[in-house]
Amino acid sequence: MPETRPSGDPLVFRPPIRRRRLQIAIGVPLTLLILAPTVFAAWLVWSPRAIELAIDEGRLEINTGPEPFSGRRTVDLGTVVSVTEVQLGRGRRTAGTELPGYCVGRFTYAELGSVWQATDCSRTALMLRFDRDRPVVLTPPEPDRFRRAITAGTGYHETLPPPETGPGWLAVKVLVLLAPLLGLVVPIVFMVAPTRIRYRNEPGALVVTTVLGSRRFATVECHAHSHRPKVGVKLWGTGAPGYYTGLYRVDGANARIYTTSVDEGVLIEGESVRVFVNPEDEAGFLEALRTLGGARSE
Image (cartoon, rainbow, N blue to C red; front, side, top):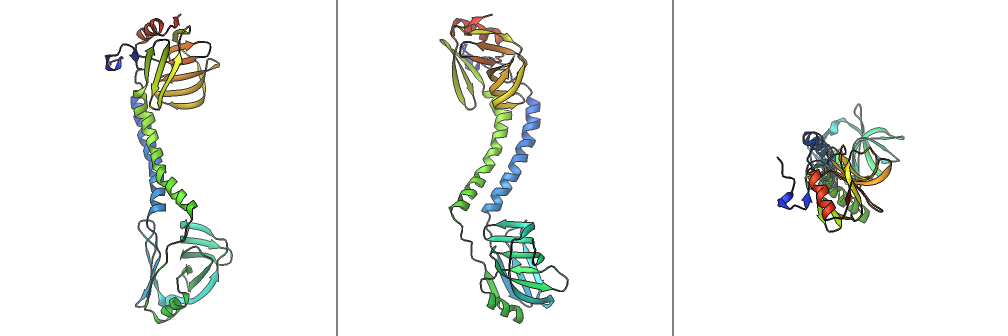
């Protein structure tokens, strides 16, 4: 039989742990589902990003940063039809990455159509046109030297300087870095929190402890009895298989719930108290609540 009195304390009770398999079956996939996009977002904004341009042996090498979502693109300069300066309007990204000072991928502009670009997101850029392929738009630091190197087919290597970003972008990066911590909430709620609920009887009071802390309820002159509630909507708090805490509608009135099940338990009611709990040793809990907490059993 599972121990119902943690550490052998006769005044402390705990609820039965129920739906453990369901908690694991839901909690593990949900944790992965939350962690995957948040970790990717953190990698995306914190990974080193730099656009490197190199011209040698009749080829233009465009290196747009770390794999797997960026990489290297090679252009045969013999296929270049023209190199012209363009003013980019309001574009729409169709594939790729668009971050402050780093616009890489396929974009569509009303005045240019669909292009592939590796730019610092500024409006003035150089566009390389080809006979068949999609135009390439770049923002080399020295456009005139870049054009001469295109003609010569060699002699150019430059890395775009890092973008100048303000405190707002730094705040976004910090928030995104903290986002994966949200994924830890799921395993805590589904697999840790149910085991942390405790009900401690004290003179004239009941102290309920959850994973987030403790709350004390005066029990003198309260009525306490076994009860099968009709639980309605959750007003605030947590509701997951095997873990229910917070303020709910119970039997048509507000009540605080701290349980691993809402099927049956003990309802404590008083002038300013309405609490529903589900101690595993229900009879022992009611006796302790009556003798020490001053509650009346029905």
